[in-house]
Amino acid sequence: MEIKIKLWRRGIVVLYAIECDGVVLVDQFLEKLYHLNPSIAQQLVTFIEYLLTLEYISPDRLRFEMSPGIYAMYKHNGILSNPISYCPARLLCCYLGSKATTMLIGSGGLKTKNVSIQQWPELLKDALFISKVARQVETRLDFGVVGIDSSGVLVVSDVDELTFEL
Amino acid sequence: MSIYEKILASVQPDDRKYWTWQHKLATRLIEVMGEQKLNQKQLAEKTGLTEAQVTALIQSNANPTLRVLARISQRLGTDLIEMNFVVRKTQDL
Image 1 (tube, rainbow over the protein chains, first blue to last red):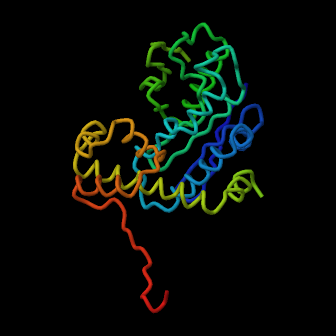
Image 2 (cartoon, each protein chain N blue to C red):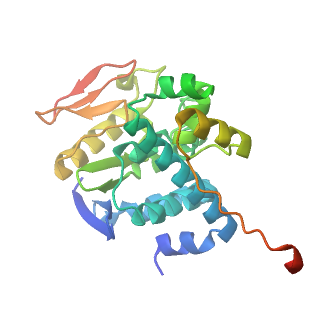
Image 3 (tube, rainbow over the protein chains, first blue to last red):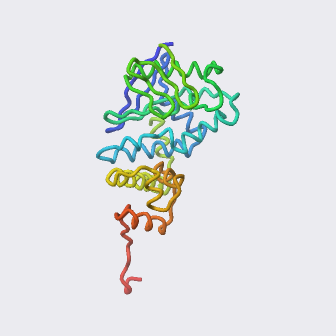
């Protein structure tokens, strides 16, 4: 799998478009999100438009993964209520960032509290995918569940404590 | 037209205004928290809100009443929003 990171800029906002095997996923992410829940997709673009009006962005405002919208998408995918359901949309992740702060959007597959990620081949695949992406953009995944330590290792916290060697 | 632009164009103007107001309120609240060095729990205690309500405000997921906004502003000692209602003179009504 070949992964490239392409910057998609709108003013001070940067979306890191993820090109996976020649397919740019940021558009797919927005399109898929719009298909799953138009209102949430509309809120996302409205939020980005709002960010463009700010002179600065508080890092707290970029905790987008905690927003009800994205979280609703997790639920839509059945991650918590029905962990059997697997939605490829979870692979359609992108980054929303500004200046030194970059956030991951749409990686709900890693956010499970009930099932070990190792028991989920799909989740493990997602985790490795995201870790590769994170390494390429030299950033950390900061949504309270997954982080990249200084050596570039993906660390899943919360209930599961796992380290993935790249 | 990109997908982003298509989605943006599909947003109803009143929805966009509403969500933007939510973002502005959240941003202002976070600013005040920083200025007064309050965490969410302390903010909840100071304003009489539940932590869940504070979280909802910060996540742009709340639709507080004017009364709630007034209480928060009063207890924090700073206005979260500027209310510039357009009031016409009597003869204009």
